[in-house]
Structures are given as structure tokens and as C-alpha cells.
Length: 264
Image (cartoon, rainbow, N blue to C red; front, side):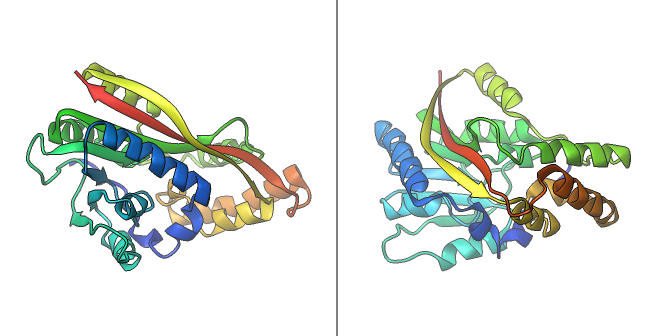
């Protein structure tokens, strides 16, 4: 039996507060998406993994009719709660990306935002996305990443060290950008990449520790509680030894990227 996609339902109450983009970043991303949608004459788009509408709501406020699918009903409920008269009403459907409930060639554009790594059978999700794209349509893939090293980067290596020491085996292999890009290229895709926005962020080791303790990040959700709680004191000691003052500033330069895929 195939593994299910990772649901964000339990994150519905804190997702927007912890994943929000700066105003200028969401404006830049929305402008970039609209430019590509208008270029192919697309008044509507499908978003796979619509969540709370971080991307869909700004598009709907600019006149795009979004069909959004997600496996997390509470996330879509939060989206609906935030809609106003300025939004073109979206069509929200509970569905999985590996079995899109739409006819073939039915969308002039599909939007995805860092979602394929949450789907174990991501190759099937890619096939489904390609199936519902109409001729001349575009796949718009957006994601956030560090633009250069982040002061908090060493924490990832520490978690890997701690989990390996406890013989923890991850329950799923997540797709990486190289394998996804290779699959889309093999399907006849040609990609144009652009940076939609850049910004600086600051935090502190104390704030990052709170995120870890509260398991805000999705990579931590599948770690069994006993293993996670066993790691946590060691991680807290590591943070104090590494950074000293838990209120010292940490910096990262962030960027929102947009890949526009067109298919022969």
C-alpha cells in the first residue's frame, strides 16, 4: 500500500502565523504569477495543495478564479474564513494530488508551492498535473529558499546527527528539486526561472527553539514522540553551546522563486 500524502490539518491554527510572507514578497509573487497567467490568457488556475490560501487568496483578489484541492479540510476551512467581497470565490475540493478529480486538458494553468516533497508518490502527482494541463498551458512552481547561508543552518545537521544516533529511519523519502526537475524535463518541459521577491529575516536561537519544541516544521511531525522528546534536551544544550546567548540575532536572506514550465 502506498504511503499517504502528508496532511497539514493539525497546523491549520498556526500555519498562517508561522508561514506568512512579508507583504512585499506576497505582492511580488502575485504579480509574477499574474504575469504568467495573463501571458497564456488564463482567467483561472488549479492550485494543488491550496492550504489556507496563502497564494490563492491574493490571486482571487486580483480576479483569478482558483480551483484549489487539498487533503486537509481544516486548512481549506481557514481559507474560506478569510475570504471577503474582494475575492473571486474559489472552488475548494477535498482531493489528493495523485488523483485529481478533473477531466484531462481542463486547466490553462496549474500552481504548486513546495508541495511535491509532501507526496510520497510524487511521480504520480506530476503525471496527474500534466494530464489536466490544456495545450499551451503552464505549470507555475513557486518555493521559498535561503539566498545564501543562514545562521540557523547548522541545526539541520544536528538533528540528522541525533536521529542517526538513535537509529531512526525516516518513514518516507521526500522528493528533491533535482528529481522533480528531471521528471518535468523528461516529460517535455522547458523551465524559465525567476526570483519574485527577496527579503531579510531575523530571529533568535530562543525563537527557533520554540519552533522546534512546538513542532512547527513539517519535517518533525513524523518523528515518534519518544524519539523527539529524547532528542530535545540534547538539541537545547547544543543551541546554548553553539550560540551562547539565546537572544542573539540570527539572520537569513530569503527568496521566493518561481519556475514557469511549458511543455512541448
